[in-house]
Structure formats: structure tokens, C-alpha cells
Length: 194
Image: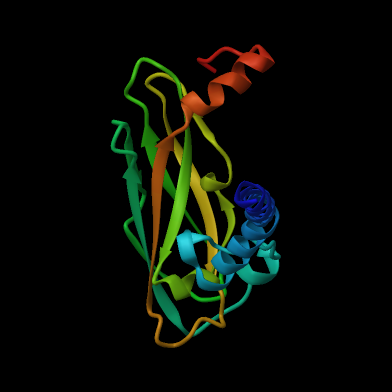
């Protein structure tokens, strides 16, 4: 009698655990990623910057009386030994107008690499107001052995930025993603040293 009770109880527990596991899987795959995207867009968490398109021509003709300082920082993955730095460390810019700068990178190694730059903005609140029209961080960058190049950035600061924000820091960290890309290179039949 007691063994029958334990069997029914165990089956009930198993059904509950399977149901909870299924719910957790569905939540993690379908619900959590969109929630994370919205949270990052609203708070600037993880340095996500709104990438909404805007009309550069219309913005570049705007004049603004208010200026803001934009600082640029470059860092590389600790496992990499590339040279990576901003063309200028700081710019005073008019809000509402487009501005252009670039970052320099050099691969001193004997092998080609594929890199990805991940941006972050501080203070986090400023993420909502820094708009990038063109950025090397939008795409992976291939660097041949010994190659050096300049990577462009076009941005503007939204005129709705609060008055108390007078300085924005835009930082990039450059990561080596070559190992992650090797299967796709092999599938397309392209050389690794492109």
C-alpha cells in the first residue's frame, strides 16, 4: 500500500519537474532574450547603443549652442597583442551635429585574425543619446598578418540629452573571434588568411 502511494507520489513529482523544466526552457529561449534587449535599450546596460537610422544630411546642417565632450577609449582582449587606439582621445562636439573620427588597429602577428569590437558607453544614461550612424563595431574586422588600418566612426549626440550630462565616454574592447569563425570559413572554402 505504501509502495503504491510512493509510486503515485513519485510520478506526480516527475510530471511537475518535467513541466517546470519545460516552462523554464521556453522562458529562457523565447521570453528572456526579448526582455533583455528591451532592458538594454532602456537602461544602456552592457553598453548597448540605439542603432536607429537617422538622416545624416539633415543633422549635419543643424546648429547647436551646447557642446559636450566625448572621450574615446580603446582596449584589447588580454589574450591579443594588437595595437588599438583612438585617433583622438577626446572631442568637444556640438549636440545634434554629426561628427567623424576613427580608431587605428594593427595586427603584428604572422597570422590573419578576425576581430569584433564591443562598445560601451558611460555614464549608462548617455547610451540613450549617443547615436552611431557608421561604426566599425557593426561588423567583424578581418586583419591580415601585419596589417594596419583605420576604422571609421560617425556619430552624433541627440539634442534631448539632459543638461547635467556634459561628458560621455565611448569605449571599445577588441576581441579575437577567429576561432569562432573558422567553421564558417571552412564551409565557404575561403582561405583563413583573407
